[in-house]
Image 1 (cartoon, one colour):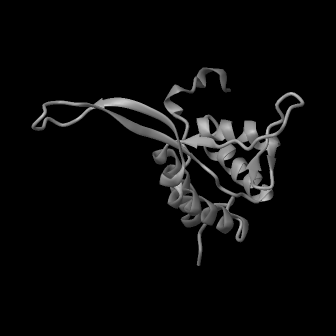
Image 2: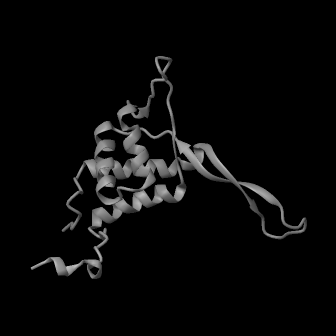
Image 3: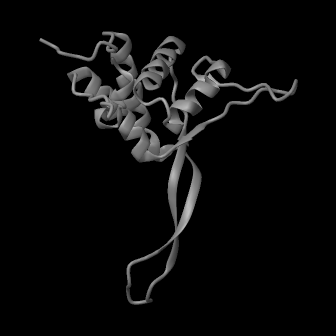
Length: 151
């Protein structure tokens, strides 16, 4: 018997997981959106500064209802996460699986949402934990509650 989280809805969440899997698999085909300079390991030429890709943006088609429910899950479980805030902010612009902003009356163009690979994998693991009912909410620290106001 599946002991999933109450937010897990069969069908919808299954499609969300498949979309996240496609996103992970297409991650390295995405457009580079951020890089940083790092020192390489010492070698025959000494230490070399190299440009390393840190973030990519991919085209991922979402069903609008699935994306809306996924964002609601994220808002319930990780409301302050930057990815949650980005997805919610861009959701009203979502159409046919892509974000289509209107540039003040000018042509519309599709936009990619950049994401770090670790964040993307974390979102997948969050859904996986919901499926198995293993997501643990942060419990409030009861030692900080002032009991003097209670009678």
